[in-house]
Length: 119
Image (tube, rainbow, N blue to C red; front, side):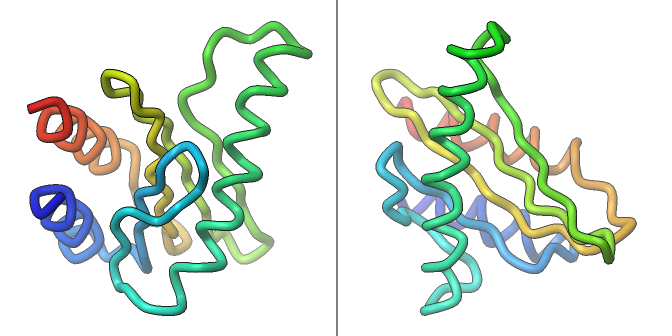
């Protein structure tokens, strides 16, 4: 878990993101940066997004969904990436400021989490 903490913190700090949160399939926060009460609201949202992944898969027939992006009218994004590791279904949620590139950094963090989680 210590390695996942470092990955999430590095993701936020190096890319100028506002926050990042790693949850399990129940929406329980495993890692949050910055931590504290601010992580609770995104964690609740991630549970709903996890359910949306499953519903879209069942209803629309899209294969297993790996990413959902919610945008507000100011251009801020909540990017949620599903990370499947062994028997674990994790969600990495990242709050991205407007006009900030994010795909490469989040993909790298997800890969790093996958690698450290399975060892």
